[in-house]
Length: 616
Image 1 (cartoon, rainbow, N blue to C red):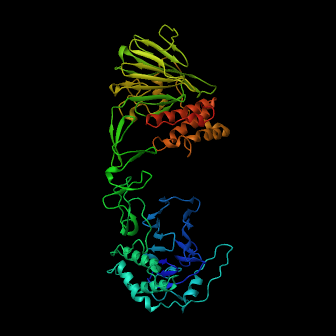
Image 2: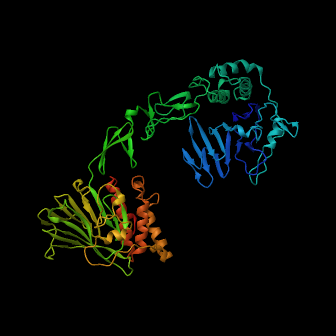
Image 3: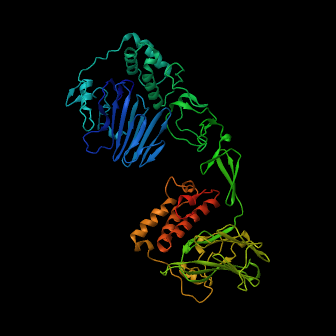
């Protein structure tokens, strides 16, 4: 069912009539139901254009007004839009809403000018009300009400639905719409120019065309009937009939096409783009501006031109790369080919991190948490020379049993003993050394005011962050693969068996696994079962407020969301903020961990510290 021009209608049963009124009318709904599956309303302005469309689909309400589309409880939306089984997207020069809900499928199409169309399922036959008629398969009984045949205006008055606090006076006087015979010939010729072979009956359209011709400001001009010719073209296209490119620059033009697009009366609305060059959908053709055959729309660059697929650029983290350009990220190199990244994996070092006082991430990326006070074996391996072992010292850092944190990292071999703590470097004779310091294959130097690095020539690298919270990052070369043991796991590419104890048993819990790697006589480690935030509502709110900068839109961290999921870091941040008395150093360390992970993926979060109080 559709309406077009200054008030032409074609019902579900293909009956055509004419009516103009400026009230709000029900276009199509299901009769006599308190909450119908659909209720579509429209209102025309004094200029005869459609001023507003309301589409109610169960609880969802879409309002189209002044060229913008709003969804109730969401606000004004951008296209394409998909939510709760409703999809709204451009469709050539029109906009199409497709609803696929539990019990119903429905299509609504409009053009922000004079056109509105509804397609509904056959199961609603005989059940519809509104300007679209009763959908009972009979053309001539649309205006029958309680056994009486009404004229157009009386029928339309029954479909009127005033806005709250509005009393719209409906036009009761019927205006005779008798077509002028003198335009019949030209109208028939114009419709033939759209499609000479179309099986959609022309008679009704010839009458609508004649009415357009006589109501026009310059009667008899061909451009007077563009809306009716467009509707005939649409109906033929929807019936999968052939239509010609009948428009010209001076006759019913669609306007100038942007960039190098071309006008087609019957083009595919499934637009192939650089982002999705293989896109296809089953749909009838429509009129509008389209890319020439053999090209796709460049939706990545700002200019939206049509390019050959080989000229498509690529995008990553909001940055555009030219075709053929390469990009290096953690452990891989990627080349931009036909709008897609073509990536090659490179040999990747293993990384193990000790962060936020009590969090460990193994070489195989398994995260866990424990609270213990002891010296633990972090990593031992037959690949380390002179029987080398890397150890981590955890101490109490507050009143509660769960306030434990990393305080030192020790590298021990038959040749060396190196202890890196908060700001100091001790060697095997407990002598304080100034940096940089060198001993055989090991060099230790200060990277910056916050970082100390231990570099070796045998494939082990340790970076220690001294403030705001003491943290350590261990990196090993690929020669260590499958040859490590300790808190950093076994580095075999499998996260499930990382909790391998010193007795070669895979444990189920972090605390039992950690206890097996104690390098001294200490109390067992604890896993905090209760949520530290549960003890104080005030602490919980404060922690969530400060940590939410990680997940919020519009912050410095947002540009990394597509690359690194912020949720695990947010949860860790909240836990740390509630668990430790000194809240801010731990919040800053959690934000820093996220920024560090982003930078390892090739995305630097510039000046993130400035966006957070107390992190500078």
